[in-house]
Length: 117
Image (tube, rainbow, N blue to C red; front, side, top):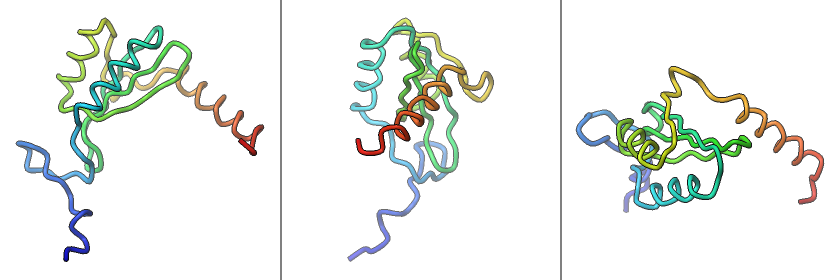
């Protein structure tokens, strides 16, 4: 019986470097496509791979609503976003939009105002 097998770092394909994250999957792509189709003014922010997570694509809608999913590579993320008519940026270069921070603040205030929900 392996007690600690699930906690082992995953070796990223071709890099020899380990992360503690799972790889991206088909369900991640489908979710990103659905988010883009169902919201207006979406922009993509490609987040670089770290020692903890694989490369991710952060999508931010016009109202600041956002989602993040793993992707196979930065090039794949840009191709997906641009192929669906969504501009994409490198998050490490341009940062995150203010509307995302505003959305998070509104959500936090709403949770504090409605603690019973």
